[in-house]
Structure formats: structure tokens, C-alpha cells
Image 1: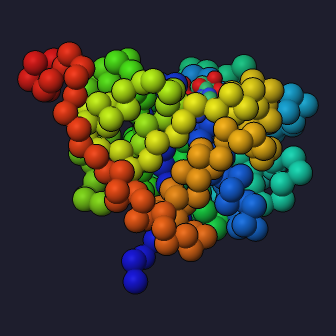
Image 2: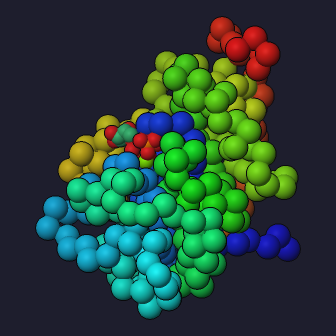
Length: 276
Ligand SMILES: Nc1ncnc2c1ncn2[C@@H]1O[C@H](COP(=O)(O)OP(=O)(O)OP(=O)(O)O)[C@@H](O)[C@H]1O
Ligand SMILES: [Mg+2]
């Protein structure tokens, strides 16, 4: 039987919907009465202030944890911000008003120590990486240490340009089978098949959902989506959880994932890495 880990990192193109998807995955896991910690590691745009209601209190920042003289499991747990009305989910991230300069440089050793601790503190851990991970050692280590990494792209040229600049880091750090490909925030009419070719395959397509965008703007991403339009997005969420964690027993998920692993010739201008 395939062994599943409990830690999934999400990395990839700016604006591809990594953070939004990370919340939807965490919410789905919590809905199954499993504890989940979502770590939003982006030090450039602190996430707690826009992923939870405005009046949410956050005592300890992820930045403080990652640079504290001593790290303990208790300290991590105390820093976890509970998601309102959701006893299974909590969030770790930077605090309102902070930026990368607010703390000393995070060391590789500390990031490793933190990630090892984290794995034991919850049933599942979702690591939402910053797209500017060259500047964030934590995001790099998150990709290295996670059991699975979802690398997300967009089906537009900006996303592909980003991927071309980061492909080595997004693909090259681990053994085979760890990386899953996805296209996020996919809008009808975009050439996703061509984009999938540029990303070397994508097992998951997360469509644009107006309801999700509204929830994001209103800090209500933890709420369930009720629109008909959201159904295919949620189906991909379930499929991903089945593939990454073996959660929910939807055997169909893995099968469909296989089917979608398309590598299509691209009509985009950049035909090969060399030409770029
Ligand atoms: N599937 C989707 N449907 C509708 N809107 C989406 C979807 N995915 C993302 N968005 C919107 O795109 C914007 C960026 O989303 P998000 O912050 O999740 O992307 P990201 O990949 O985490 O970006 P960054 O690289 O800046 O961290 C948000 O306004 C969000 O509402
Ligand atoms: Mg993000």
C-alpha cells in the first residue's frame, strides 16, 4: 500500500492561487475532523491579516518563531492562530505591519527544526510558500522537507515566464514522484493545454471561481463555497487530498489525475528552454 506523509508544500507562479488553495485544502481537511496547521510563509505580505477576520488577535508571528533563541513545540502551538468557528484548523504566518526586515535572517537549521516539530503537531500540515522563495529560506526548506510539493502555474505567459526562471528550484530538489503539477486560477478561454505542456504536465486544474475571489476579498476563504461554479474547484481539492495524503478514499481521484497528465505541444512563443 502506498505510504502517504502529512506535509504538503504549495509553490509556484505569483497569483496562481497558492494561498487561496492552501486555505481551501485546510478547510476541507478540517471538515473531516482532522487537525491541520496552515503555514503561510510569505514574509512580504503577512497573511493572517487577510486570511482571518480583521479583529483576529495574533500574538506571535511566524517571524518571531523562526528567529527565537529557542524553539519548542509549546511555542509553536501558542503561536498558532485558531481559525474562528473551526476547531480543527489554525494558521501560522507573519503579523500585520511586518516585512522581511522585521526579524534577523532565518537560518536553514532553524527552518529544518521548525518543520520537523510541525510535522508532529497536527494530523496534516499545509505549507504555503512565497513565490519569491530565493529571499525566503523557509519556503525553500518547506519544498525540500514536505512529503509532496504542488507546483502551481497559471495558463498565461507571466506564469510561464516565472516558471522558466524557477524550474530548477521547483523541480530539481527532490526525488521522483514528490512533485505534483497544477494550473491555478484558470479562466475559460485560456490555453491551459498549452500551458500544461510548458509546465511539463499538470494533474490538477483549479478554475477561476467568482465566489472564491469574493471570499478572498472579504477574508471569508474558510467558508464553504455554495455556488454551482465552485463544484469543479472543490472536486479538484478532494482529488488533490486523495493523491497527496490518501485522504477521503476517493479512488477515482488518482485515476483522473493520471488521465490529465497531459504534455501538449505549445503554441506559445517559447518553444524550448534554449530559445528563451
Ligand atoms: N481559483 C480562483 N478563482 C478566483 N480567484 C482566484 C482563484 N485563485 C486565486 N484567485 C485570486 O487571485 C488572487 C491571488 O490569489 P492568491 O493570493 O491565492 O495567489 P498566490 O499564488 O498565493 O499569490 P502570491 O504569489 O502573491 O503568493 C486573489 O485575488 C484571489 O482571489
Ligand atoms: Mg500567496
